[in-house]
Image (cartoon, rainbow, N blue to C red; front, side, top):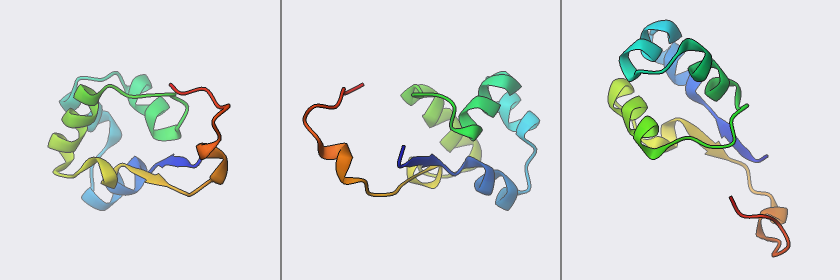
Length: 79
């Protein structure tokens, strides 16, 4: 998938511990770890907003996208 989670780089840049961030945002460490690894298929906007508030960032600071022409194929399922 061309959408990549870049949360780890932001956590490192801010000098935070994932455990502390999870507690601040109200996620379990497991939930945050799954998001950080890109193993989730989606994230609630409210959770994304809490992450952005805790990290003083924008959603684009947590996610990146590499263009893939297949993303525009009409026969693909839309989530």
